[in-house]
Length: 129
Image 1 (spheres, rainbow, N blue to C red):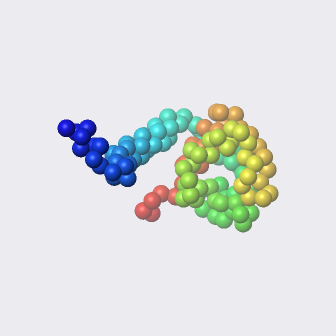
Image 2: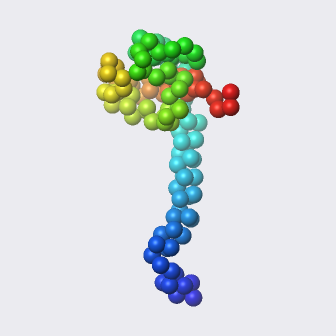
Image 3: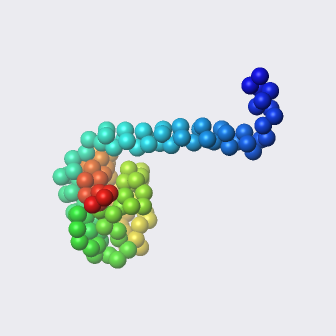
């Protein structure tokens, strides 16, 4: 009976029905992945700040306040406005080649990436004040 009904439904409607069931599941899976990776991060934020001071502070505002020295370098505290901070993990591992025009290329070891991301996450502006 269900198969007969399903055959009578137009293909566009079938896609909408499937999407209405699958999209929430996909979003839930993505949310769980992001939450898990954030909870599992074991980086040392103090060491991450040291790395930021060495590699980033000449252009970026790395703390919870202040303006970046380079006008195209976003302050660290605002990075999560545009994308998840965890998205930087791969870029740090492979070497950031793009950013602002004067941004130097550098690569970090896995433990250093965890440290820097832990620090960046610690200075993000919080929603609602």
